[in-house]
Length: 425
Image 1: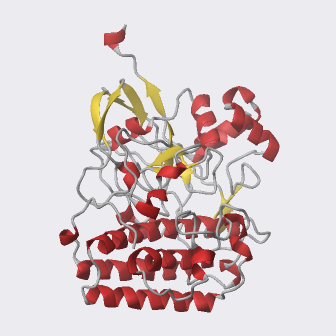
Image 2: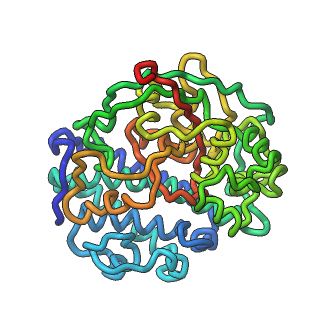
Image 3: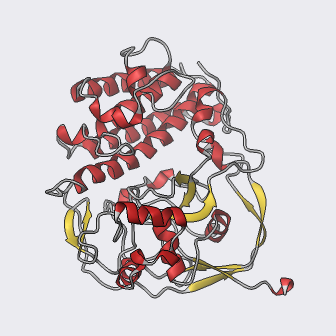
């Protein structure tokens, strides 16, 4: 068993509560896959979108490898369902996960059931020590990440097919216009960011540290489809002056004319309920960082830094349109006179910050040190969670990250602007 750094003392982790949470998380993963055919769960239309069957197996392997240890359910599964842990050993390359027709889905379900029984017995019998309990908590958050990936990857599977089938029926309201976008001024100064020392957080959220912020303004809501429609109508996808160089090359190479799942660019959108007309009032989603940056520039604004975002969100309620609400798509862009609207849920919001270590960052010990730290290159930070994120998975300090070209994730943008600092003039 490999060691792990603990941020929560083992004695504060209640095995009974963990068993209830373990069962709930594992059941929800199966429920997400329940509407799918076997064929839906084995397709991999692009390297980044793993099959649902692989997600079901990989999350199970995580608990078997890092919590249970001992004799495996099937020795071949370590090779088949290891994701990227070099310390564990070789694995199937990510782009080839969709070629795994064997083992079958029934075998994967049996694997999940076996590991679930073994975890339940270990918790009930007090057989898991402090390190293993901490790993179990990490594994639950890991599975919640994969629950979101199941939905985003499945959306790419279904949304790129000729028939564009629905995942399931989902309620949608009448189309409308977004609430007016206003701006909140923040004074800046020396602020503290990052997760506190106690409680669960991923290693990349720590340590808590101080940052100096210049005064800035942040938008009251995320960008809506109405702004994206106006950007398209004004030739935004054809104006090189608005784009970062890498983004402009991608626009030309892939002939982008609109966000992912818009077809044709100004008429229809695919979501997990099928194809429907674009609602100008809904929060815009499936934007790459390049698109988010270009739209911000077109609107005379910029992307916030992650420090600005977390500072602005410090006093906001941790509620919103998460996966638990069952909408599985961003809600109309709202207005909240009391605070910034839709900071949490709806869409992961791009920031201008590259994904890098906080001062004093320490990765977890052993193989789990590969969980976050080794990806701190070529990625950008997103904040806030989305309509596909489990509500109890998100924190103000949560740092998501993707490469700037990614747009199959539920990503959007909130704008920021500079504020002149009188002390510097």
